[in-house]
Amino acid sequence: MTLVAGIDSSTQSTKVVICDDTTGTVLREGRAPHPDGTVADPESWWQALTNATEGLLDDVAAIGVAAQQHGMVALDEQGAPVHPALLWNDNRSAQAAIDLTRELGGPQACAEAIGTVPVASLTASKLRWLAEHEPHLADRVTDVLLPHDWLIWRLTGEFVTDRGDASGTGYWSPREGRYRQDVLATAFGGRTPRTPRVLAPAEAAGRTRDGKLVSAGTGDNMGAALGLDVRPGDVVVSLGTSGTVFASVDKPSADPTGQIAGFADATGRFLPLVCTLNAARVLTATAAMLGVEMAEFDRVACGAEPGAGGLALLPYLDGERTPILPDASGTLLGLRRDNMTPENLARAAVEGMLCGLAAGVDALRADGVEVARVLLIGGAAQSRAVQVAAPLIFGVPVTVPAPAEYVARGAARQAAWALAGTAQPPEWALPGAAELEVVDSEAGARIRELHHRAFTQVHGETA
Image 1 (tube, rainbow, N blue to C red):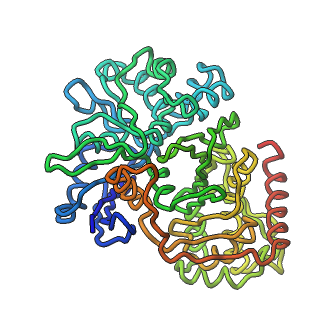
Image 2: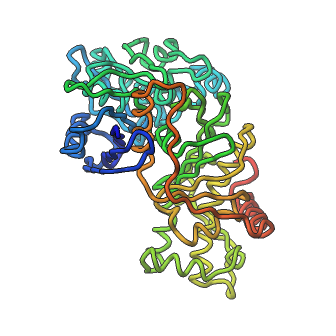
Image 3: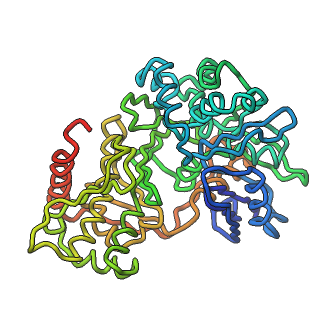
Protein backbone atom coordinates (compact mmCIF):
# COMPACT_ATOMS: atom_id res chain seq x y z
CA MET A 1 0.00 0.00 0.00
CA THR A 2 1.29 3.45 -0.98
CA LEU A 3 0.26 6.48 1.08
CA VAL A 4 -0.48 10.00 -0.14
CA ALA A 5 -1.17 13.17 1.83
CA GLY A 6 -3.79 15.81 1.10
CA ILE A 7 -3.50 19.25 2.70
CA ASP A 8 -6.34 21.78 2.89
CA SER A 9 -5.03 25.21 3.90
CA SER A 10 -8.34 27.03 4.42
CA THR A 11 -9.11 30.42 5.87
CA GLN A 12 -9.49 29.07 9.39
CA SER A 13 -7.15 26.08 9.62
CA THR A 14 -4.95 23.50 7.95
CA LYS A 15 -6.41 20.01 7.64
CA VAL A 16 -4.39 16.96 6.59
CA VAL A 17 -5.53 13.49 5.52
CA ILE A 18 -3.30 10.50 4.81
CA CYS A 19 -4.92 8.17 2.29
CA ASP A 20 -4.38 4.84 0.58
CA ASP A 21 -3.54 5.85 -3.00
CA THR A 22 -5.68 3.05 -4.48
CA THR A 23 -8.93 3.31 -2.49
CA GLY A 24 -8.79 6.77 -0.94
CA THR A 25 -9.37 5.33 2.53
CA VAL A 26 -8.36 7.90 5.15
CA LEU A 27 -5.87 6.34 7.58
CA ARG A 28 -4.65 9.35 9.58
CA GLU A 29 -5.65 12.99 10.01
CA GLY A 30 -4.17 16.18 11.45
CA ARG A 31 -5.27 19.75 12.01
CA ALA A 32 -3.87 23.11 13.14
CA PRO A 33 -5.60 26.51 13.42
CA HIS A 34 -4.86 29.71 11.51
CA PRO A 35 -5.04 33.20 13.00
CA ASP A 36 -8.43 34.84 12.48
CA GLY A 37 -8.87 37.79 10.14
CA THR A 38 -8.97 38.92 6.52
CA VAL A 39 -5.20 39.37 6.19
CA ALA A 40 -2.45 36.91 7.04
CA ASP A 41 1.28 36.49 7.31
CA PRO A 42 1.92 33.57 4.92
CA GLU A 43 4.40 32.20 7.43
CA SER A 44 1.42 31.34 9.67
CA TRP A 45 0.18 28.93 6.96
CA TRP A 46 3.56 27.21 6.88
CA GLN A 47 3.65 26.92 10.64
CA ALA A 48 0.13 25.45 10.65
CA LEU A 49 1.11 22.99 7.90
CA THR A 50 4.16 21.97 9.90
CA ASN A 51 2.11 21.47 13.06
CA ALA A 52 -0.75 19.65 11.32
CA THR A 53 1.57 17.20 9.53
CA GLU A 54 3.87 16.49 12.48
CA GLY A 55 4.53 12.76 12.59
CA LEU A 56 2.19 12.05 9.65
CA LEU A 57 4.39 12.30 6.54
CA ASP A 58 7.27 9.92 7.23
CA ASP A 59 5.90 7.06 5.11
CA VAL A 60 4.06 9.22 2.54
CA ALA A 61 5.10 9.05 -1.12
CA ALA A 62 3.34 12.15 -2.46
CA ILE A 63 1.69 15.34 -1.19
CA GLY A 64 -1.09 17.49 -2.64
CA VAL A 65 -2.06 20.98 -1.45
CA ALA A 66 -5.38 22.77 -1.92
CA ALA A 67 -5.91 26.18 -0.37
CA GLN A 68 -8.25 29.15 -0.13
CA GLN A 69 -8.67 30.86 -3.47
CA HIS A 70 -7.80 34.41 -4.51
CA GLY A 71 -5.47 35.47 -1.67
CA MET A 72 -2.79 37.97 -2.77
CA VAL A 73 0.75 36.96 -1.82
CA ALA A 74 2.98 39.70 -3.27
CA LEU A 75 6.73 39.00 -2.93
CA ASP A 76 9.86 41.07 -3.46
CA GLU A 77 13.09 39.95 -5.13
CA GLN A 78 14.20 38.16 -1.94
CA GLY A 79 10.91 36.22 -1.70
CA ALA A 80 9.61 38.24 1.25
CA PRO A 81 6.00 39.50 1.33
CA VAL A 82 5.83 43.25 0.75
CA HIS A 83 2.41 43.40 2.45
CA PRO A 84 0.38 40.96 4.57
CA ALA A 85 -1.54 38.62 2.28
CA LEU A 86 -5.02 39.95 1.52
CA LEU A 87 -7.45 37.03 1.75
CA TRP A 88 -10.55 36.35 -0.33
CA ASN A 89 -12.79 37.79 2.41
CA ASP A 90 -10.99 41.15 2.61
CA ASN A 91 -13.37 43.68 1.05
CA ARG A 92 -11.13 46.78 0.92
CA SER A 93 -10.77 46.23 -2.84
CA ALA A 94 -14.51 46.54 -3.63
CA GLN A 95 -14.15 49.90 -5.35
CA ALA A 96 -11.03 48.69 -7.13
CA ALA A 97 -13.11 45.86 -8.63
CA ILE A 98 -15.69 48.33 -9.91
CA ASP A 99 -13.01 50.56 -11.42
CA LEU A 100 -11.22 47.60 -12.98
CA THR A 101 -14.43 46.32 -14.57
CA ARG A 102 -15.01 49.71 -16.16
CA GLU A 103 -11.44 50.03 -17.44
CA LEU A 104 -11.52 46.55 -18.97
CA GLY A 105 -14.58 47.48 -21.03
CA GLY A 106 -17.47 46.51 -18.80
CA PRO A 107 -18.98 43.25 -17.47
CA GLN A 108 -19.38 41.53 -20.85
CA ALA A 109 -15.78 42.21 -21.87
CA CYS A 110 -14.51 41.01 -18.49
CA ALA A 111 -16.56 37.81 -18.59
CA GLU A 112 -15.24 37.01 -22.07
CA ALA A 113 -11.62 37.83 -21.19
CA ILE A 114 -11.22 36.22 -17.76
CA GLY A 115 -14.45 34.25 -17.19
CA THR A 116 -15.51 36.42 -14.26
CA VAL A 117 -16.71 39.95 -13.62
CA PRO A 118 -14.24 41.36 -11.05
CA VAL A 119 -15.33 41.45 -7.41
CA ALA A 120 -13.41 42.36 -4.27
CA SER A 121 -12.30 38.77 -3.64
CA LEU A 122 -10.28 38.39 -6.86
CA THR A 123 -6.50 38.74 -6.76
CA ALA A 124 -6.61 41.29 -9.58
CA SER A 125 -8.83 43.58 -7.50
CA LYS A 126 -6.48 43.28 -4.54
CA LEU A 127 -3.48 44.14 -6.69
CA ARG A 128 -5.38 47.19 -7.92
CA TRP A 129 -5.93 48.26 -4.30
CA LEU A 130 -2.23 47.81 -3.51
CA ALA A 131 -1.18 49.83 -6.57
CA GLU A 132 -3.50 52.70 -5.64
CA HIS A 133 -3.04 52.79 -1.86
CA GLU A 134 0.52 51.51 -1.33
CA PRO A 135 2.34 52.33 -4.60
CA HIS A 136 5.77 52.29 -2.93
CA LEU A 137 5.10 48.67 -1.91
CA ALA A 138 3.63 47.77 -5.30
CA ASP A 139 6.86 48.97 -6.94
CA ARG A 140 8.81 46.33 -4.97
CA VAL A 141 6.68 43.38 -6.11
CA THR A 142 8.47 40.93 -8.40
CA ASP A 143 6.22 37.86 -8.02
CA VAL A 144 2.54 37.34 -7.22
CA LEU A 145 1.40 33.99 -5.84
CA LEU A 146 -1.78 32.50 -4.40
CA PRO A 147 -1.83 30.78 -0.99
CA HIS A 148 -1.51 27.29 -2.49
CA ASP A 149 1.27 28.49 -4.82
CA TRP A 150 3.19 29.89 -1.86
CA LEU A 151 2.94 26.61 0.05
CA ILE A 152 4.09 24.64 -3.01
CA TRP A 153 7.06 27.03 -3.25
CA ARG A 154 7.94 26.39 0.38
CA LEU A 155 7.71 22.63 -0.19
CA THR A 156 9.58 22.44 -3.52
CA GLY A 157 11.29 25.78 -4.24
CA GLU A 158 9.25 26.09 -7.46
CA PHE A 159 6.96 28.97 -8.48
CA VAL A 160 4.11 26.97 -10.03
CA THR A 161 0.31 26.82 -9.91
CA ASP A 162 -2.55 24.96 -11.58
CA ARG A 163 -5.24 26.15 -13.98
CA GLY A 164 -8.00 25.83 -11.35
CA ASP A 165 -6.48 28.23 -8.84
CA ALA A 166 -5.02 30.47 -11.58
CA SER A 167 -8.54 30.98 -12.94
CA GLY A 168 -9.49 32.76 -9.70
CA THR A 169 -6.86 35.47 -10.04
CA GLY A 170 -8.80 37.58 -12.53
CA TYR A 171 -5.83 37.70 -14.93
CA TRP A 172 -5.74 34.11 -16.23
CA SER A 173 -8.24 33.18 -18.93
CA PRO A 174 -9.95 29.78 -18.64
CA ARG A 175 -11.17 30.10 -22.22
CA GLU A 176 -7.72 30.84 -23.64
CA GLY A 177 -5.71 28.83 -21.11
CA ARG A 178 -3.18 31.60 -20.53
CA TYR A 179 -2.34 34.63 -18.43
CA ARG A 180 -3.76 37.89 -19.69
CA GLN A 181 -0.79 40.18 -19.17
CA ASP A 182 -2.83 43.11 -20.42
CA VAL A 183 -5.38 42.58 -17.65
CA LEU A 184 -2.62 42.18 -15.06
CA ALA A 185 -1.00 45.43 -16.20
CA THR A 186 -4.33 47.27 -16.07
CA ALA A 187 -4.99 45.94 -12.59
CA PHE A 188 -1.52 46.69 -11.23
CA GLY A 189 -0.94 50.17 -12.59
CA GLY A 190 1.15 49.12 -15.57
CA ARG A 191 3.26 46.66 -13.58
CA THR A 192 3.60 43.05 -14.77
CA PRO A 193 5.21 40.99 -12.00
CA ARG A 194 6.15 37.37 -12.61
CA THR A 195 3.36 34.83 -12.30
CA PRO A 196 3.81 31.13 -11.49
CA ARG A 197 4.03 28.58 -14.28
CA VAL A 198 0.70 26.79 -14.81
CA LEU A 199 1.03 23.01 -14.56
CA ALA A 200 -1.11 20.38 -16.25
CA PRO A 201 -3.61 18.61 -13.95
CA ALA A 202 -1.51 15.49 -13.30
CA GLU A 203 1.89 17.21 -13.55
CA ALA A 204 4.15 17.23 -10.52
CA ALA A 205 5.35 20.52 -9.06
CA GLY A 206 8.58 18.99 -7.78
CA ARG A 207 9.84 17.20 -4.71
CA THR A 208 10.40 18.05 -1.09
CA ARG A 209 13.91 18.06 0.36
CA ASP A 210 13.43 14.48 1.52
CA GLY A 211 12.23 13.33 -1.90
CA LYS A 212 8.44 13.26 -1.63
CA LEU A 213 6.57 14.04 -4.83
CA VAL A 214 4.42 17.19 -4.69
CA SER A 215 1.52 17.53 -7.12
CA ALA A 216 0.37 20.74 -8.79
CA GLY A 217 -2.13 21.62 -6.05
CA THR A 218 -5.26 23.70 -6.63
CA GLY A 219 -7.88 25.98 -5.08
CA ASP A 220 -10.24 24.79 -2.38
CA ASN A 221 -13.39 24.57 -4.52
CA MET A 222 -11.51 22.66 -7.21
CA GLY A 223 -10.10 20.38 -4.53
CA ALA A 224 -13.60 19.67 -3.21
CA ALA A 225 -14.80 18.80 -6.71
CA LEU A 226 -11.91 16.37 -7.10
CA GLY A 227 -12.48 14.91 -3.64
CA LEU A 228 -16.16 14.34 -4.43
CA ASP A 229 -15.40 12.96 -7.90
CA VAL A 230 -17.93 15.34 -9.47
CA ARG A 231 -19.33 13.95 -12.73
CA PRO A 232 -21.53 15.40 -15.51
CA GLY A 233 -24.99 16.01 -14.07
CA ASP A 234 -23.66 16.63 -10.56
CA VAL A 235 -24.00 20.04 -8.93
CA VAL A 236 -22.33 20.57 -5.57
CA VAL A 237 -24.09 22.75 -2.99
CA SER A 238 -21.84 23.56 -0.04
CA LEU A 239 -23.49 24.91 3.11
CA GLY A 240 -20.72 26.54 5.09
CA THR A 241 -20.48 30.01 6.58
CA SER A 242 -21.21 31.16 3.06
CA GLY A 243 -22.70 28.98 0.33
CA THR A 244 -21.26 27.80 -2.95
CA VAL A 245 -22.86 26.05 -5.92
CA PHE A 246 -20.57 24.58 -8.58
CA ALA A 247 -20.21 21.89 -11.22
CA SER A 248 -17.56 20.41 -13.50
CA VAL A 249 -18.37 20.98 -17.18
CA ASP A 250 -16.84 20.78 -20.65
CA LYS A 251 -16.98 24.44 -21.68
CA PRO A 252 -16.00 27.72 -19.98
CA SER A 253 -18.60 30.16 -18.68
CA ALA A 254 -18.77 33.89 -19.42
CA ASP A 255 -21.63 35.37 -17.39
CA PRO A 256 -21.83 39.19 -17.72
CA THR A 257 -24.33 39.41 -14.82
CA GLY A 258 -21.57 38.45 -12.40
CA GLN A 259 -23.62 35.68 -10.79
CA ILE A 260 -21.42 32.89 -12.14
CA ALA A 261 -17.65 32.91 -11.70
CA GLY A 262 -16.25 31.01 -14.68
CA PHE A 263 -13.34 29.09 -13.17
CA ALA A 264 -11.35 26.13 -14.47
CA ASP A 265 -11.24 22.90 -12.46
CA ALA A 266 -8.36 20.63 -11.44
CA THR A 267 -8.94 17.98 -14.14
CA GLY A 268 -8.74 19.93 -17.39
CA ARG A 269 -12.42 20.86 -17.45
CA PHE A 270 -14.23 23.97 -16.16
CA LEU A 271 -15.92 24.89 -12.89
CA PRO A 272 -18.72 27.49 -13.01
CA LEU A 273 -19.41 28.64 -9.46
CA VAL A 274 -22.05 30.74 -7.72
CA CYS A 275 -21.32 32.10 -4.24
CA THR A 276 -23.86 33.31 -1.67
CA LEU A 277 -22.96 35.12 1.53
CA ASN A 278 -25.79 33.59 3.55
CA ALA A 279 -25.84 29.88 4.28
CA ALA A 280 -25.32 28.03 7.57
CA ARG A 281 -25.23 31.26 9.58
CA VAL A 282 -28.89 31.81 8.69
CA LEU A 283 -29.70 28.71 10.73
CA THR A 284 -27.41 29.51 13.65
CA ALA A 285 -28.73 33.09 13.83
CA THR A 286 -32.35 31.87 13.84
CA ALA A 287 -31.55 29.28 16.51
CA ALA A 288 -30.01 32.03 18.67
CA MET A 289 -33.10 34.19 18.20
CA LEU A 290 -35.28 31.26 19.30
CA GLY A 291 -32.98 30.60 22.25
CA VAL A 292 -32.22 26.98 21.32
CA GLU A 293 -29.16 24.91 20.48
CA MET A 294 -28.80 23.62 16.93
CA ALA A 295 -30.00 20.10 17.76
CA GLU A 296 -33.20 21.52 19.20
CA PHE A 297 -33.53 23.94 16.27
CA ASP A 298 -33.46 20.94 13.94
CA ARG A 299 -36.28 19.26 15.87
CA VAL A 300 -38.34 22.45 15.91
CA ALA A 301 -37.94 23.02 12.16
CA CYS A 302 -39.02 19.46 11.43
CA GLY A 303 -42.23 20.16 13.36
CA ALA A 304 -43.55 22.49 10.63
CA GLU A 305 -45.13 21.56 7.32
CA PRO A 306 -43.47 22.41 3.99
CA GLY A 307 -44.02 26.07 3.24
CA ALA A 308 -43.80 27.10 6.91
CA GLY A 309 -47.46 28.06 7.07
CA GLY A 310 -46.91 30.79 4.48
CA LEU A 311 -43.84 32.39 6.10
CA ALA A 312 -41.06 33.34 3.69
CA LEU A 313 -37.64 34.46 4.88
CA LEU A 314 -35.39 36.34 2.46
CA PRO A 315 -32.18 35.39 4.27
CA TYR A 316 -29.92 38.30 3.34
CA LEU A 317 -28.68 38.79 6.90
CA ASP A 318 -25.22 39.91 5.72
CA GLY A 319 -26.28 41.56 2.49
CA GLU A 320 -25.96 39.25 -0.50
CA ARG A 321 -23.61 38.52 -3.36
CA THR A 322 -26.01 36.36 -5.42
CA PRO A 323 -28.35 38.02 -6.19
CA ILE A 324 -26.22 41.18 -6.14
CA LEU A 325 -27.72 42.96 -3.12
CA PRO A 326 -24.77 44.07 -0.96
CA ASP A 327 -26.86 46.44 1.16
CA ALA A 328 -29.90 44.19 1.63
CA SER A 329 -31.10 42.88 4.98
CA GLY A 330 -33.17 39.86 5.93
CA THR A 331 -36.93 40.12 5.47
CA LEU A 332 -39.66 37.90 6.95
CA LEU A 333 -42.95 38.04 5.08
CA GLY A 334 -46.37 36.45 5.52
CA LEU A 335 -46.76 36.76 9.29
CA ARG A 336 -50.25 36.02 10.60
CA ARG A 337 -51.50 35.15 14.06
CA ASP A 338 -52.08 31.53 13.13
CA ASN A 339 -48.58 30.94 11.69
CA MET A 340 -46.44 32.79 14.24
CA THR A 341 -44.89 29.70 15.77
CA PRO A 342 -41.27 28.73 16.50
CA GLU A 343 -41.72 25.73 14.21
CA ASN A 344 -42.74 27.84 11.22
CA LEU A 345 -39.98 30.38 11.83
CA ALA A 346 -37.33 27.64 12.02
CA ARG A 347 -38.70 25.98 8.89
CA ALA A 348 -38.78 29.34 7.08
CA ALA A 349 -35.09 29.84 7.89
CA VAL A 350 -34.21 26.45 6.41
CA GLU A 351 -36.33 27.00 3.31
CA GLY A 352 -35.08 30.55 2.82
CA MET A 353 -31.46 29.48 2.99
CA LEU A 354 -32.05 26.64 0.53
CA CYS A 355 -34.05 28.85 -1.85
CA GLY A 356 -31.05 31.19 -1.97
CA LEU A 357 -28.82 28.28 -3.00
CA ALA A 358 -31.48 26.97 -5.40
CA ALA A 359 -31.26 30.29 -7.22
CA GLY A 360 -27.59 29.49 -7.75
CA VAL A 361 -28.51 26.08 -9.13
CA ASP A 362 -30.98 27.81 -11.46
CA ALA A 363 -28.22 30.17 -12.64
CA LEU A 364 -26.00 27.21 -13.57
CA ARG A 365 -28.93 25.48 -15.29
CA ALA A 366 -29.61 28.64 -17.31
CA ASP A 367 -25.93 28.62 -18.32
CA GLY A 368 -26.38 25.17 -19.84
CA VAL A 369 -25.21 23.04 -16.89
CA GLU A 370 -26.97 19.67 -16.59
CA VAL A 371 -28.50 19.25 -13.11
CA ALA A 372 -29.34 15.57 -12.48
CA ARG A 373 -28.54 15.52 -8.78
CA VAL A 374 -27.24 17.76 -6.02
CA LEU A 375 -24.30 16.76 -3.83
CA LEU A 376 -24.94 18.48 -0.49
CA ILE A 377 -21.87 19.11 1.67
CA GLY A 378 -20.76 21.39 4.51
CA GLY A 379 -21.69 21.48 8.17
CA ALA A 380 -25.36 22.39 7.66
CA ALA A 381 -25.82 19.47 5.25
CA GLN A 382 -26.02 17.14 8.25
CA SER A 383 -29.13 18.90 9.57
CA ARG A 384 -32.20 16.66 9.42
CA ALA A 385 -34.41 19.66 8.61
CA VAL A 386 -32.10 20.61 5.73
CA GLN A 387 -32.12 17.05 4.40
CA VAL A 388 -35.93 16.92 4.51
CA ALA A 389 -36.35 20.23 2.67
CA ALA A 390 -33.48 20.04 0.17
CA PRO A 391 -34.93 17.55 -2.36
CA LEU A 392 -38.22 19.48 -2.41
CA ILE A 393 -36.56 22.82 -3.09
CA PHE A 394 -33.85 21.67 -5.51
CA GLY A 395 -36.34 19.46 -7.34
CA VAL A 396 -33.76 16.73 -8.05
CA PRO A 397 -32.37 13.83 -6.00
CA VAL A 398 -29.90 14.91 -3.31
CA THR A 399 -26.84 12.96 -2.19
CA VAL A 400 -25.38 13.79 1.22
CA PRO A 401 -21.88 12.30 1.48
CA ALA A 402 -20.65 11.32 4.92
CA PRO A 403 -18.87 14.17 6.72
CA ALA A 404 -15.26 14.31 5.56
CA GLU A 405 -12.49 16.74 4.64
CA TYR A 406 -13.31 16.73 0.93
CA VAL A 407 -10.90 19.52 -0.03
CA ALA A 408 -8.01 17.64 1.60
CA ARG A 409 -9.28 14.39 0.07
CA GLY A 410 -9.21 16.04 -3.36
CA ALA A 411 -5.64 17.20 -2.78
CA ALA A 412 -4.67 13.66 -1.79
CA ARG A 413 -6.39 12.24 -4.89
CA GLN A 414 -4.43 14.70 -7.04
CA ALA A 415 -1.20 13.56 -5.34
CA ALA A 416 -2.07 9.93 -6.12
CA TRP A 417 -2.78 10.92 -9.73
CA ALA A 418 0.58 12.67 -10.12
CA LEU A 419 2.31 9.69 -8.52
CA ALA A 420 0.64 7.22 -10.90
CA GLY A 421 1.17 9.35 -14.01
CA THR A 422 -2.08 8.08 -15.55
CA ALA A 423 -4.44 9.85 -17.93
CA GLN A 424 -7.24 10.00 -15.35
CA PRO A 425 -7.25 10.31 -11.56
CA PRO A 426 -7.71 7.13 -9.51
CA GLU A 427 -11.26 5.93 -8.83
CA TRP A 428 -12.05 6.60 -5.17
CA ALA A 429 -15.53 5.66 -3.95
CA LEU A 430 -17.50 8.19 -1.89
CA PRO A 431 -17.77 7.07 1.73
CA GLY A 432 -21.26 6.32 3.10
CA ALA A 433 -23.52 8.73 1.22
CA ALA A 434 -27.22 9.21 2.05
CA GLU A 435 -29.53 9.29 -0.98
CA LEU A 436 -32.60 11.57 -0.72
CA GLU A 437 -35.34 11.40 -3.33
CA VAL A 438 -37.87 14.05 -4.34
CA VAL A 439 -41.10 12.94 -2.64
CA ASP A 440 -43.34 15.96 -3.29
CA SER A 441 -42.34 18.08 -6.26
CA GLU A 442 -45.53 20.13 -6.03
CA ALA A 443 -44.68 21.22 -2.47
CA GLY A 444 -41.24 22.24 -3.63
CA ALA A 445 -42.70 24.28 -6.49
CA ARG A 446 -45.05 26.05 -4.04
CA ILE A 447 -42.15 26.94 -1.73
CA ARG A 448 -40.07 28.34 -4.62
CA GLU A 449 -43.06 30.35 -5.86
CA LEU A 450 -43.70 31.73 -2.36
CA HIS A 451 -40.09 32.92 -2.18
CA HIS A 452 -40.16 34.33 -5.69
CA ARG A 453 -43.22 36.42 -4.82
CA ALA A 454 -41.58 37.58 -1.60
CA PHE A 455 -38.39 38.54 -3.44
CA THR A 456 -40.30 40.45 -6.11
CA GLN A 457 -42.34 42.28 -3.47
CA VAL A 458 -39.21 43.49 -1.67
CA HIS A 459 -36.53 43.77 -4.36
CA GLY A 460 -38.37 43.81 -7.70
CA GLU A 461 -38.02 41.50 -10.66
CA THR A 462 -34.62 42.72 -11.83
CA ALA A 463 -32.71 43.06 -8.55
